[in-house]
Length: 291
Image (cartoon, rainbow, N blue to C red; front, top):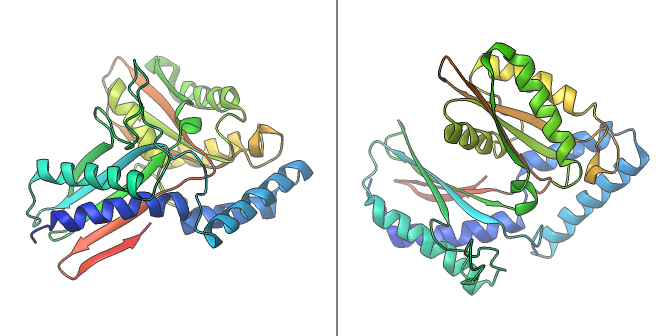
């Protein structure tokens, strides 16, 4: 399958706008689940306001949150897909820039030293573009995630001592959630990376934080940790917006990688309650949007 790069550019423009305006169904279901179980009056009132905000934003085709975030595009390419990789990245960046200029969206991307804003949501190495490969022969998938700074500012890495075992992982995650408090606009998705190298571990925590609710870590040990940590985090009493309650987190997600015998990296990256994402899938039958 040969990829039409003009179609990719148009899709990536639409994906950015779509992600900012439509919340995925799994997150809405997560809100309903938390709202039904919340026992704290303040927590329940805040959840109700959040749910109403989602409804109003979608009804009026408005943004779910004013923070348009750092744009991230996760690309998976099938073995039978014919595409120029460099041109693909250019098309993605062009679509991102056009979404910001033509919609228009607030550009939240600036130079790290001068703080100059090009008003394109683009800059050096931004949008972030991650590329992976899949066995589905004739499928190209592009996922767009606008990652807001309220969640991204709450990121941590610890090079844990292997002898401290699983307890060190659990303690670190709980401490991070307490440290974040209401700064991440909970209820959150807490992404945890375990293993690999320092940089891989942090990347895994981002992958975990932006996974769909209801999904599970493919590593059985990681899946066990997810269940244990989700229970622990929601017993902390942080609650919606950090003002108290049972609903501190939709879920804790874990991703693992093999690591060195003398180290055990642990990273935490959080996603706020406005856990936005959108996806475009290209096949020989055409292009479809989803989440």
